[in-house]
Image 1: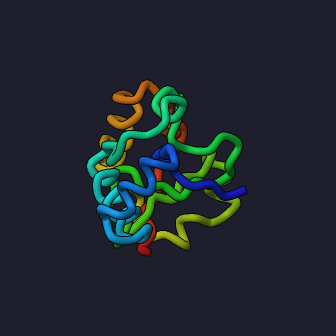
Image 2: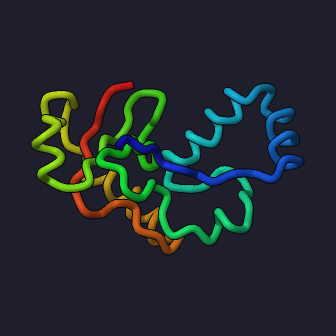
Length: 128
């Protein structure tokens, strides 16, 4: 199973206001992802999202992560564990292992939001 990072959801009114300000849903998503590159949340999300324990999906074999990287250029490909990484041959499909800076940004996000940002296996970077 493949999952993606989650930055949360907005109340309908907040979503429409942010989309109108950005000009389109695509531009709003790009703005949120640019801020996620720095390990932050771009917008005020719902209370339940603010209390969430992790930005990554539970139970995913592989997570496509954009927290801590420039998602317009690359994503983090995060295996649940080393055996999944080997079984799926992720080293053959990705350019490199994530840099220390990318891992630190992702973990800083987790610490800031009191969650577990999949610290269990070294992410790999994949060009988008």
